[in-house]
Length: 237
Image (tube, rainbow, N blue to C red; front, side, top):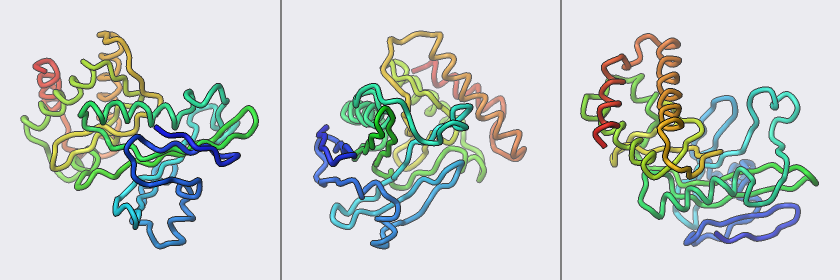
C-alpha cells in the first residue's frame, strides 16, 4: 500500500495497482463529469459503479456512512486516532491481505481519508467482481440447490478458519457468480484468533438476515432446509 498526501486528503493505493489515484477519483461528480458511471446500488446511501477508461477496469466507489445512534450526531465523520485505524485504510489493508492469499474477495484499488482536525471522513475503491450479484438478488429470482448451499457454508468456514471476522455478514454482503461465492464489505472486519464464540455469532447474524429478508418477501427462496445445508457445508469444511 502506498500513501500519498494531498492536504487535507490522504490517498492510499493498493499494492500492485497500476493507476495513480488522486482525491477526485473518490468523488461521484468526477465520474459523472467524464460519463464513466455505469450504475448505482441504492440502500440507505448510494454506492457507485464506475469504469476507469485508462485502466479499463470496473470499480465500486463507496463512502463510509455512520449508522445507528451516532448517525444523529454525524452522518459520516469519525474520530481520528491514526491513519491505520481509519475505516478505509483498515479495510483496504485487510482486503489486500485476503486477496493476496487467494480468498474470494474484491481486489482493492485504493482509499481516501479527509482530515477535519480531530475527525475524518473516508471512501474506498474496489474492483467490481464481474458477473456477480448479491445472494439476496439470487434468492429473489429462485432457489439455490443443496450443493450451492453447502458450497456457501464451506466458503464461510474457510474465512473462519483463517480467523477472518466479518462485522456485517448478511445476504447482501455475499456475492454469487461464475466462480462461486465471495464476501464483500469488510468495514470493521479484522483477523482474530479463531474462536467458536465469535464464529457462531457470525453465523447467527447471517441467519437473522435471512429471516429478516424472508419476513419482507415471503416468496424468498430460503427455508430451514437451506440453512441446514449451509451448516452441513460449514461443518464438513
